[in-house]
Length: 68
Image (cartoon, rainbow, N blue to C red; front, side, top):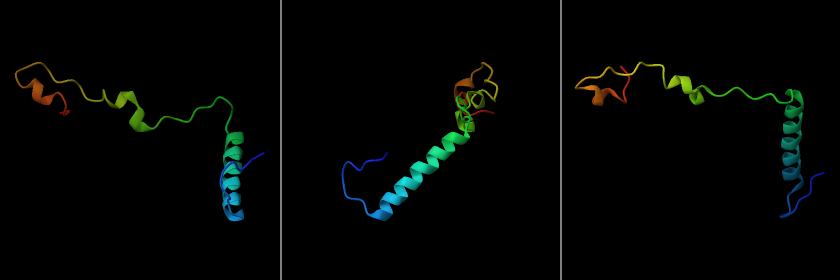
């Protein structure tokens, strides 16, 4: 049951909110319990270590941020 606590929504606004709630509930039923969504590629810690670290030397400090 959904209860409007504050405000006075129009019937169209209430119908839109209920449609969103129903769509989210249907999506939750479709996914298996305990299943996690795959992490985005930008969140993968392995992407940080794709390039080798610079070798020690006099110019190493200038190459520590930009991979070769």
